Amino acid sequence: MPQSKSLPKQRYTRQRAARTTRRNLASITPSTSHPQLQSPLFSLLPSELRFQIYMHVLAQTHDPTRPITKDSISPLYRPGHSTHTTISTTLLQTCRLVYSEAHSIPLRSATHHFRHLGSTSFIYIGDVWLHHMTSQRGADLYHLHDNLVALQASNFAKFLLPHLKWRRITWTVCAYLIPPILAERREIERLAQTLAALVLPETCREVVLELESREDLGERWEGMREQARKCCQLALRRSGGEALGFDEGCSVQYAWMGSGQARWGTSENSQAKKSMEYCTLRMCWRDGAARREYISYDHLDCLRLEGCEEIMKIEALRL
Image 1: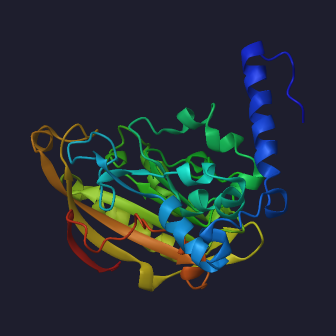
Image 2: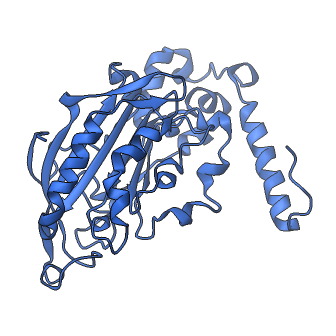
């Protein structure tokens, strides 16, 4: 639908330019590109080897120049997330043929992290770029990892939009959400009910739900485990009618050392600590497909726990 010209002129002009760029990029195909036979990349290497090269260059990676320290006051720091991530797309600018063969790799390899201090639901209602992504690009999306600080259904569903075709979805219920200072207790107590009402994209092959606690919230831990027991009984619905079943083999619980600073709801004694022990219950639902079918582009795998220096203990989920 055309944008109304009642929009401010600068914004209207910017949106028209963006649409023109998208149309030009969509028109780039092998048939509209120079065959580049003078290049050994195209004249000598088969397409399978070229694609392996593209994946190593264009896939999302850790950025060691932008570390995330334990003293972060938001959910930024946790196992597997000790640096920010980066994607270099310079290769896509070399020629049209490279672009046509490799442009989908960045999105198909990327985990989109939403893990900022102010990540409550209202911050996503406005001008979020995922909301304005085209259906063509939305079909290439891979992994959403959202650190929640509120548990209403709208918080879980804010990125479950028709044009966003996620392959994997991870929700981490942050430890500082547990005290009622940030979330009413009844939202935690009906977590399983909220999860059962969600409708996932039909492309979704795996869902992970993490319930996180910490050493100063011990009295609330049994309530969290009770919710986990209820969640494990669920099958998560997809829009196509099929469901994801609970995968006991991929579900674990683990302990790790995180920040004790500037966490909401902490006691005065815990606020004086520079670090404290966290415990996380990780539950996983899958459709039974081989994981290589949907994570083959993922060279980062930010959910991998093995080898993370923050981890103190990993064991099978026991509820």
